[in-house]
Amino acid sequence: MGVLVLRDAATLDDAGRPHVPRRPLWTCRACELPWPCPAARLALVEEFRLEPLSLFLYLGLALYDAAGDLHALNPNPGVTPAELHARFIGWVRETDLVRRALGARGHGASPATPPPSGRYPSWRAANSGP
Ligand SMILES: [Zn+2]
Image 1 (cartoon, rainbow, N blue to C red):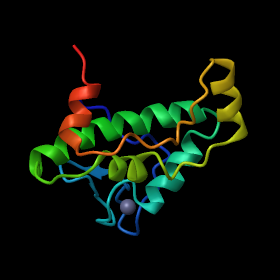
Image 2: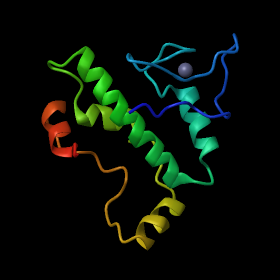
Image 3: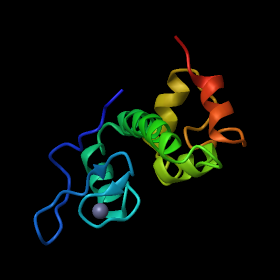
Image 4: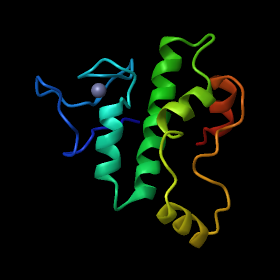
């Protein structure tokens, strides 16, 4: 599944490069930091400010793609689900708007709740479906 192209709100570096991921390494094409880098995070928050739940969906799909790419590059020991969560989703501030939206849908868990501990392969096996 390939999902990610940061939309128009991506900030550019001094050379005019957008802060978007370079796959399969998932480093930023502009600043070389792990993506989402600080500039990409600012751009994402701004881009999704009126659709905060969509930001979680977007980042969840990015996490899914990154998990596959990074595991293929380095399966053992590989990146942990907790590490991926912190990098892709854990940094997003849970807003009142998100809490209200989740409450209205009957979800009690916070979207910022980390996944169970353990290594990626077992986590992926438990969360992959047909
Ligand atoms: Zn960057």
